[in-house]
Image 1 (tube, rainbow, N blue to C red):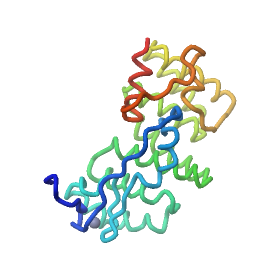
Image 2: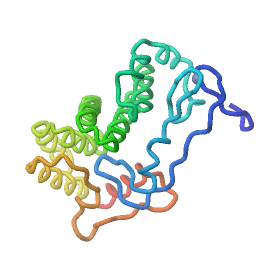
Image 3: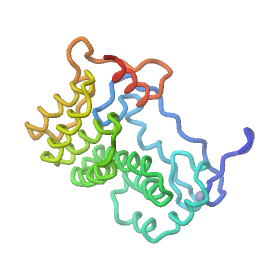
Length: 230
Ligand SMILES: [Zn+2]
């Protein structure tokens, strides 16, 4: 698309808004990397829905043509009546990603749906969505995704699987921050704690409450700072 063209939906060509840009977080993220405020409470703005064709994406203009088959599928239409309304845009985005083979964004979409369910106090819906995210991330060898999966399993109430995954991760890394997070998660798992915790809660005192540096993207910048520290 040229710089001056107005964005249009990649599926149907209807006019679309530019992608939402969340404000920089000023508070530490949760252990599953949900960003802190003020970004946190803008969740409902992260996914746009096309008014004409109901395609859903962070950036409708970036949707590839292959997304059309997903949007027109019976599974996609059924979401409208079968899922919690607050989670619908994220579920739609996740389904599109599934159908176009983008498993990474499928998992992120489902996790964002779980956050929307958290905010709506829909606990069983949130747990169900997290179970889906954990399944998509089951084969990961990435330590950041692995640590997020640990939180996802615990908050889904899959405590035995979470404990076993904590052992797997502990065998893969000696890195100081990762080790602190695994230790913290193990204590929460033992307590059968389903709750939300900030990454800063898992840090030993000298690294307590690290703040996100200016101008960096919320998640990747934060993690690379954390995991590079040792
Ligand atoms: Zn459209």
